Image (cartoon, rainbow, N blue to C red):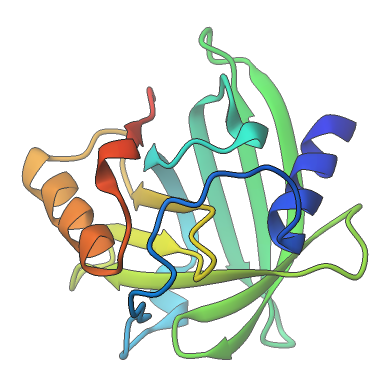
Length: 173
């Protein structure tokens, strides 16, 4: 777990040898109309840009819950290929603008990361998440499998926001 925390620290702090997956000179925009209540709940990570702290992770889930103070609790779980839990990390996200949150993970004090929801479909079944620094990006889905047309739409959204989608990898669920 200590390695996961160190990697998260480096990611959100902007330090370290992380690959940048988007042209940071390209404009990036979050979803203009965003319903945080509809975003809450369990999401399956169906695709991601490779980041060291998720190396070897399968069956990754993210669960969000709105707290009374307006913040969002975050629970990310990484699983081994056999489905057993490999690691988990909790945190708190603070909304700072529509579809833009600052995320802080427990055990990583004084450092926050940008978490932007770039797109969701109308029913909040599929979401595309990115970071302006281009060091991370995810495609989330409400079910473990994603239809090909939804994945293609997600890829198009990432490309529109300057990401090199040739580096996007699907995540086994």
